[in-house]
Length: 396
Image 1 (cartoon, rainbow, N blue to C red):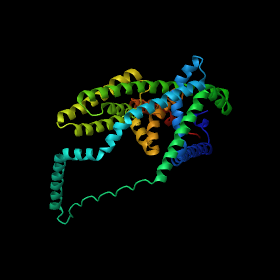
Image 2: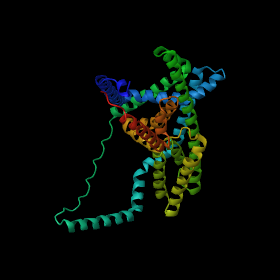
Image 3: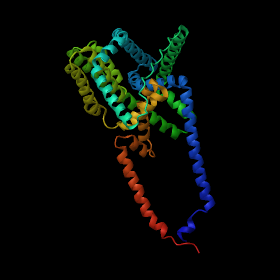
Image 4: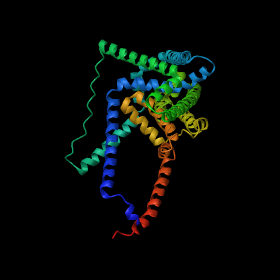
């Protein structure tokens, strides 16, 4: 029997291709429907997603307390209480200097404008020269018009403030209560839920994946928190030595914003540049403040974090930036917070799947090289199969 005799008839292969296209179309439609639901119903899903994130990050500590014979409910309550008290104490310590800087924001902007006025004049001269050159090529071109002043934003009414405050409190309480339930239930609750919707084999695999995600996220964010604490303390110490006002405020800003990859450190650098430009009269102090933080951030990102976190959970920087960007567009600040943990969880889940090797390679820093090598292997296989198919004898 020749090779061509073993092929399926054309109607069967056509039906298979049609079913494959239909399944892909349904997958695309389902993904679009889920994305639309998450976008338009964000007020419902954001507290749930943040509660899941807090539960995954704090679960390792709660399970550690449970191994020392402390009930999970008490351990969960203690961890959430420590987290809330820590955030409240830090906010209370930093609220006064932050309010002072916000109150002085108009005067600060005037000082910045006065100090950058020479550069602004230079830019206006260059713009005038460019316009004159354009008029030589097009004499009828109208002169550039000044940009219209933006209308002043209307102040919020009392009912709007009360409504916004109430919705924020409801979201915060939802996050706390749901995270408390998730931490109190722990792995036994997840096992019961998985066993009720899947077979024993699939439930066991799902529990292994969830346990790996919980462990890796807890370890990852615990290490990142210590690194950012060290960066904040180092930034505060350096700003104190340079004579910057409110150095501990800028240290706290550096430590908190550094949880957001790339965007956080860039924002801190911009804020420190503005504050140094306002606070110091000579450019040497300004460059010293900006350069010292830039050196600290480079040391943290290129030496300390790879050394402590390791290469196992490293992610492609382009994907991290895009995830933060689209997360901010999709869910605002909550999307920025959830973006990187989602990528970490996806990579951990992919490493526990035999069919997701391409996903792991794609999320890794060397993903582009891995995809190129994969494409090369596919091309090589096709080249080997092509002569065999061309030498197949025809029927008849």
